[in-house]
Image (cartoon, rainbow, N blue to C red; front, top):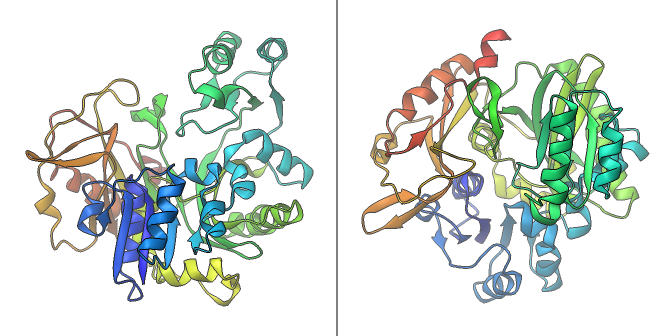
Length: 423
């Protein structure tokens, strides 16, 4: 069959890599794609939000399955547009993707269905938010209600920071309309874990766990980013935690969405905080995490197309997900200055070092092909992933592999997976 992947980042490169392994697939397209994806797929110059062009392309090229990688088109209703044209598509419809598109919706859903999460209040009026903060316990967390490229969460250590945060989100509109409504929630402490799951509206099957590193600098300092690296599995996600979450988080979430008339089909990403009071939900996403996909998919044994088709057809319960008994670590190579100001167009060298090396991968995020060669074209440029027998070996392999790639303003965190040493 022919497959179309919608998106242009490291997540979509990892999806394309997994799809390319399926014997069911003989042709892959990606819209719009990137330099790395172009080695696996034919990239077509259609933007992720150009729904009419995407559906027309899928019809004209007899696409058997379209996979939506990104959050914006999902929240915008791209799946509805495809289904309206009778096209097979993997991802949640607009009324289900709201679980990521609105923090206020997801928090209200958790409250209504007793899914463990942090205490919170929602505000549409900045003055009322500031009044609330005058007596709130610090530190505290401010979240833009809408999509903000993974950067719309502010952890405020004191009242002054919190009030400035309200101004940043609601008055200065740093994230546009995403900050029209904000959620203010209690600050939770503990280990963070990300769990991705396939869903068919009724059944949920979880993948192996992962842990992302959001802050730009070593020691979890600096600004929030889209993710600077990740590892899988998390040693803190024990069998006991998994069983609790299956009983009180994952299936209850899918059941809640169905009960609300919003059946969820696609990838549900649950961000968890393992607190002293037990696991609690930090956030939901409606698609693969980036860079979580870059460590989870290389460890998955299943044919990804088989699993996705089972989700679309409502027969996920027939399948068992299988993962390799090993570990993977991804280190993001970024442009120095990310997530604020950074230069593009720097020539990247060293890709040949990954050729023929089993268990080593370089997933492109912000790259493009030019006459000079492949150049940087974003804040997060590449995700260097390596597997190992255990997390320590995978981490050592990943950092060794980062040395194989060079570009002039290359920047990375040097402590991805350092928590492994404390496990």
